[in-house]
Length: 329
Image (cartoon, rainbow, N blue to C red; front, top):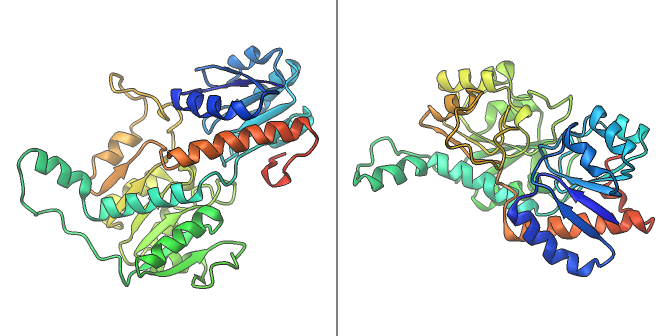
């Protein structure tokens, strides 16, 4: 099987080259360019392509891939909101993902964001570098005894629930499907999450139902001035409503690893450019906001698992033994 990788970074090559030692039947070529309707033409002669979170797998792109003979689209990520599943099925392209490469990596980053923005670590670091050892402006809150509201209790959300329990927090959660392993969690509706949580952490997929789940109406229901953390997908939070909510002092702090309109920024060095969108600069203008660059997944263990599962997906497809839990369509 010949696979063309899109949006390849050096760490991708290292992880996958190590993994390929166990898959001699798979041949890989790497492209730095991401997948879109222009670069899709490069897939001619390949059996499969491998894409990431910001890759374009819309209908026009999938049409081109099908014309070039591609039969398989491998997602080296868990999310698949960038995939036109109807078009993929129509074109006979199987789409496989990596749903559980390292839930703990993402949950640990979520709690890191919550702790950092709570204890003002981003501000304290800068102050101390300037020989300013005053504590003014650095007051945080105890997490012990507070209420954590977790939205989405799949593998990542479940890991976050366990971490919050370890901090001595009361854990409440919202999910359409309750996780039976979380016997210490109280499931509630979203209104209760907004009203009772001191920490709200988002771990649900981006769907039509969850798009702008955090919006002007839901922010009005917030009563306890919580810390909001999003390590899921940017579209779950309405950025304009969030910015208004921050200005209205509805949040004690906000930690974002993802945000709307992040596409062109993800994993890129743009320090010498003027950014087209103002969302990031507006968010970073607030002293109680921390933004990271879609790095929640980024651990050595997660990279190893992404490589292994992606290559196993390719082998399973070729051998007619697909892991149905990894199938998107």
